[in-house]
Length: 326
Ligand code: PMV
Image (tube, rainbow, N blue to C red; front, side, top):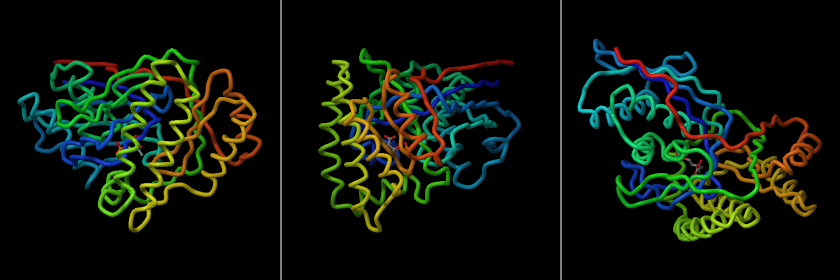
């Protein structure tokens, strides 16, 4: 039995940073994201009735150590749901620069959840699929759906899931400015742990971000991009503030990341609808509209000619590309 699925990354507008339950990956606050139509991950899961262990390749290179352990733990969760023990081979092709703050784990585990559930015959709706994807990587729960998506924090495995939100505002674009493609020095998992354990700002982050989820949800319901954009920058800065308070500090943003935030703010002063955000890495993602995206690109190419950039539209959710049962 073999199944292939495709998923795209998502970029959080209202961020997720910190787990209330690390084993189940229950976040301490909800989050809201936009699924991209770029950087797909394609993953095939092939059941291996003769094998004693799971195996996996990423871009044709065999995985081992913690990376393989994470996939095996995830597959075991799906096997428990299916009530079978058959091992599998996972072959994944990722077009996102892995671990560069571009959420490769989101598309990766959304595609793996979709392919693994099909290969193991676990029949679930998309909400339950998002709960399953969440166990691989929190942000993957959101990539199960396309468009604007809210991950409800919930309080247990059943109540922590993603769902799509209706967006009727201007047509959105997201520009990714690649400040660096190097692997990040501290993983988001480790960074979250350190922030929770040592940052005096963590509590304030959780309290204020819960409120931002509510305010952003209301802005989305009204198609109000001005408010959503402003809240996106606010959630970004508050998340990075909580990280900066950790010991030792987690400083993912570089000087050029801040220079981009300044350039986008100057564009806004000239009437362009654009807001910047950044995750656990130095890359800056700019939320803008189809009408204004050219002005954002002109700004990057003239002020930051050395930076590669990529323009994304709004993508669909994870889906099955192929499924064979022999
Ligand atoms: O789910 P993870 O471990 O990839 O964590 C994602 C954390 C951020 O990208 C920084 C924020 C977010 O909500 O995507």
